[in-house]
Length: 427
Ligand code: ADP
Ligand code: ASP
Ligand code: MG
Image 1 (cartoon, helix red, strand yellow):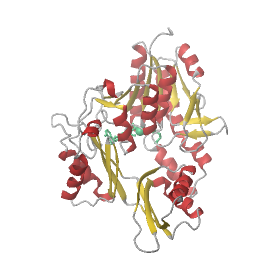
Image 2 (image 1 turned 90 degrees about the horizontal axis):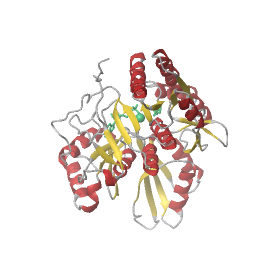
Image 3 (image 1 turned 90 degrees about the vertical axis):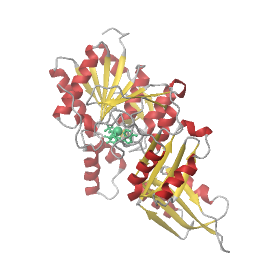
């Protein structure tokens, strides 16, 4: 194959390879891209709910599964998809080869279940492309050069595998094929009238992914921004243009608010009776950081009375709750007690235009008030406002904010707002 043929990286998510028909459909799309004169690298996720099932299987065996073994287990899901898709492509008359993350040269640090890619040694992929092959790479996994163990990249990590390969191979675009037709002004499963965004800036997408829009993994967007990789997020069921994620200078639209995002998988930790003196917060958050726990919203109340004890609350991913509680316990006499709350949710609004417009936060709080939703914690960035609220109120809050900021577009209704009737492609 001529060495100057363009390289495209195509990533297919779990729903896009869930059963034999879906896998064959993905295989056809890959073959079509190849027949159009591209050198093709496809990154696949585990089929359907496989990763959830593997996680559940681990918890059937152990309350706190060993993280190295967890990675051995979880990495199997994407290997299955790749081997099956490679078989389908070979049956269609093309040369194909499937590779594990390690074989594909994805080198990571050694933090199991949330490893970071530190290098991509893509020689084996280049060699296979040079031998006229379509290359299928198992997403979401790599190998640590320190420990030589298999690692995984955190939930949704196949997006990051795809972007990292696109960067290493100099691909013109990283195509993320998924079960919605692009990035919307809110999760179309919650807001049926959400609008598909033709273009989103890296900055906005970072805030959206960080605040719960799991359509693109946060690290994938970070990697794309840092390496200038354009992302095209689109449907694997229909041949429609999706959403381009690009530098801000290349995006045309800059509305006040671009999207409402939400998350329902966080938990709150309240450290009760903390001494209000210098150094205490440093000890707590250093210990959490050392344990690789990502802390999101933090508030500390002003101590009242003579004992000068404060309460410090923060939110973490629900899957990190046990670790966070253990870390605080290990600090010994730092507080009276620790309370946890797993019923919290978060809604956020994101928009680059917010930077220069006062009054957006006030409007968000008014909307929550009108819906009788109590705001428990607040955090802001120049282009995002987040409110921590009761988990059960999240869908109502998302719909109310989406309506109040007029983000919908009646003319364009997503094809499959409920997820019950997936769009199909004529074969
Ligand atoms: P994949 O398995 O293809 O990686 P994901 O489930 O990780 O797919 O991400 C796609 C899902 O992200 C959609 O089904 C949708 O429900 C959800 N989602 C959340 N917020 C948004 C948004 N703003 N735009 C589009 N999809 C969103
Ligand atoms: N299979 C992994 C997950 O479910 C990775 C991915 O789909 O991107 O999180
Ligand atoms: Mg995903």
